[in-house]
Length: 235
Image (cartoon, rainbow, N blue to C red; front, side):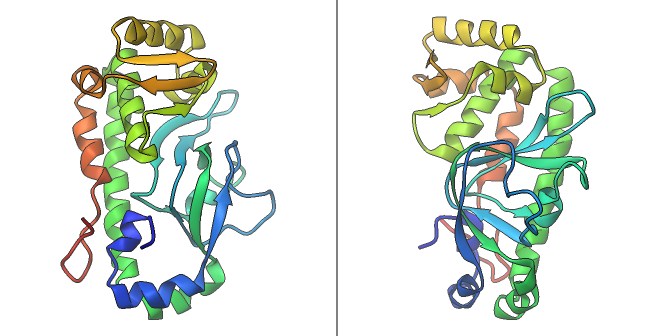
């Protein structure tokens, strides 16, 4: 069974026809998802790891607007790079992904008639999540947003701990490192997490959920599989 929850929503016979048209690739941690000058794929379905959807403003570090893990997909518009798009993809945690090349799009549409509808429904969720994130950045405290980020990351990485630096968190949350350091210290003093040498471990998930902003309820909805065109969803 392929690990991506969206692909699991396709009818089994369509998935069997679709998978040979693409390939599984590694997505190493770093600021670039693909090597420079390489044509972007039509679709990228993460199987493991975590990608951050970021927006770039001149003279500022990338600001995170969303996350994608094995529950979602990334389309070619996100993969064009800063020269061609105001938003991009940053690999926060290395992993694997199933990649459909742009040259196979027409074949994929014939192999899986349900694929386009699946994309449309997922992208609608993504637009709703982006709107929620814009409001979250304006109205919610750093501690609430940090708790939200940690829960979202754990949901996608499916482990108690992961590698992340305070500098990275500051850039993604749009705050200075000193603010992140203080917020992490407060969460650590409360027994919610441990953070040493860029390794962060969540010790009290329920406590983080109580602290996180209300946006997490929406994020949990976004992690659920998108209903497929044939009326079912992956468990």
